[in-house]
Image (cartoon, rainbow, N blue to C red):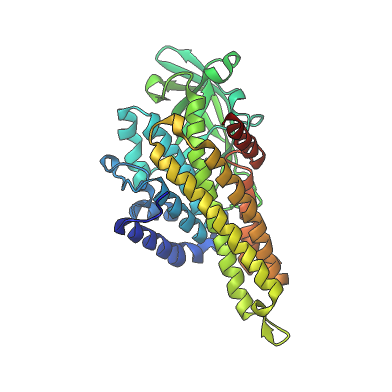
Length: 384
């Protein structure tokens, strides 16, 4: 693997770090308290070209590749978990259109997604089927000129704020995974209802809602990819999404380390800063080592994803699952230790580490729970 970067890539990463420090991090507490999605943060990423990292120039992208994209997600997430999560889910959805969409679909949806004027959401999970994606029941009945959709989607990130959804349904539940088909559906489509925002433990700057489809008609041109090939489409997209979530968790972990290290230098006990105590030093050392290990895992997976290109058979399934599983598991450990270093102040909302701990928990659950990631890792391992 080659982790050297071009001058252009280094300039982009420097820009993202500056934006994270100066514009995202200072507003995180206010966003968390308000519980409102920051459309301004999202548009800012589009204006700076950060949302275009995965996309070719013909649609307005910067074509920086998956590795640089993932590193941008980390830096954005270090400043604001919510914006980093939005960037990851949005890019995963738009990448699905890039890889499997028709030319007209790409021309219609990608420029706005790259510019940050249109927000995309990923609608796969259902109330009874989260990790078991092959068993979804949302039904797409073939009718003249298109499909009639009925069913419900659950836990859809940014559902209340999205302009378009990449959505999965089955043309026949009896067909199992061979009936699953993907679609593009626009907000405001007749028959598409959006449920209330879920009140979550963390991630207040992203809305999470259900989608209710009642005789929702979609024309044939809204089908994404081949009929019956939707599960393969979803799994390929999810491997990229898992790398994004690993980068998201790594950014939060790095923020927790930075906050804890800075606090340990200022907090005086027994006439010395607590950073001079071996117990605190060992905590910081373990936190930093685990964070760096997660970072290397997601960068390896991103590197492999980048060079797999459009060859689905080379998709780094195991590596993406390893990165997501490890980076999010140690992320929760790191944030918990950061709270411990802050002591009683760490439990207070006056300081940021309690927020980071609340936020990072969900990264172990979505984009496939870490239990499912372990199943995938073992399956791929046993194949070889």
